[in-house]
Length: 56
Image 1 (cartoon, rainbow, N blue to C red):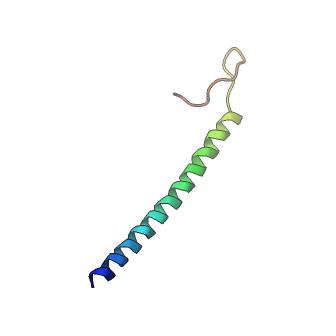
Image 2 (cartoon, one colour):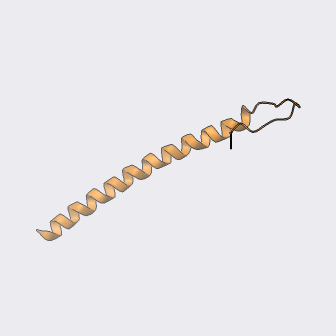
Image 3 (tube, helix red, strand yellow):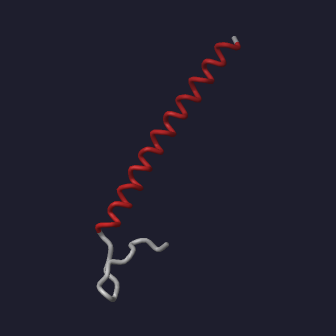
């Protein structure tokens, strides 16, 4: 009984980790796309130079 519970617990943990990693990959792809898009849509400041698109 105990080995069966350990196997089920291991399967549950691995399933949860796999789902979390997949979600983190999607978040990383979205952040990368926004970051790259920021280089394209940078605005010019008063002197005509391209400024930073982020605040910090």
